[in-house]
Length: 160
Image: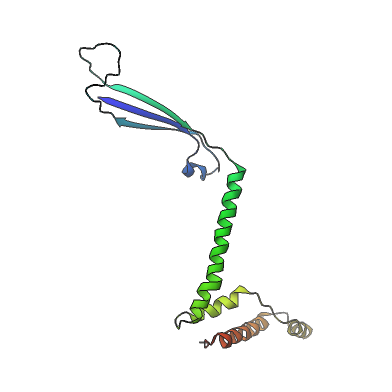
């Protein structure tokens, strides 16, 4: 019986990196496997008549990982660029396509509504506060209804 033991020392396993506490965690990985040798292979330099037992062949390897700021910054820049391109594609391409479909016109209206933040008009706020009304929910509701009505009129989508 011929057995090869592959012993690897590593600290670069991604699954281990993201477990608490975060960072590189050293470990040994031992992988046994059966070996089959051809008739011409003889791992010994001397003649043998008969051999019984288990032949172990040990292979030792190592992979040491390190933290490099350059690679982290590169990954962050690339991922933020991809995120920006995806956001641009949704906002500029898909929303315009949605405007021309009957099924998704409401999605285009809601996108237009939520991409910008609109607050209560200043004069309405001053009037409400002067009258002693400090609850702004009614003013916000009126501003929201007005804004949605304008967006629906702009896009041609009726409000439900």
